[in-house]
Image (cartoon, rainbow, N blue to C red):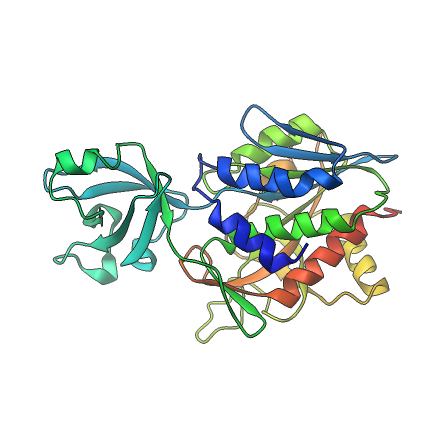
Length: 331
């Protein structure tokens, strides 16, 4: 599988938190030829099992994304929305959006709003309706929408919405294709509702009950003008091995093993520390009696905006590292 092609397919199928069905179906389709078993748990996580000996290892990436949910329809036909996940009104202003049924619109601030202090309740979605009656023929309260923008490339880099975390899902699918004989019982888990509280990861960890887990997600960077140094990674620096973020201090054995594998196979790596923000790793680490948990991170600029950016060579390094980890040995 080609990582860019997979990413584009997932992006075309996507919906926000609580509406991961299209992405889940596409992932299952792409994973089916390489899996021994695929199940969907009660919350909606997709669990892809590949049989092997020894301990149980789990690799995860989340399927969901940030977005908006309709809360009110005004008499003039404009929609008021709530946030699903970490949406910034300033970063979303004047972005095209798309609903599951194909209705399109634009997220816009009120003219009187102070853009520097913009609040979500000072914004609306315009779907071209002239009245509430007309709007209700197109959408209902409770419908959700996402950024309506395609994936594009610039040199060796990819740009667009929802690299968080569709790029990581593509990484796991490409790694799965490379895993011929896993050294362990292996579960690749594509989780739901990460953006609204790491919810899917909690139930998935109890379902799989892994001995070790590696979470694949994007990470913040320190390579743009005026960086506030929230992260340590840089685009083009290779796969970022997570050390810690606000949700987890990674298990030192997992960090060391990932670094050892990368060194032995000449996979470019860097270390990932984020001062704020977290991933599914924070929830998985605390499941049952505790899980040895680490992370493989893809450096990403402009996270949670309609124009995230990542380096395809970094993503490919993550594929190699995840596949090598799954084929062991751990010791």
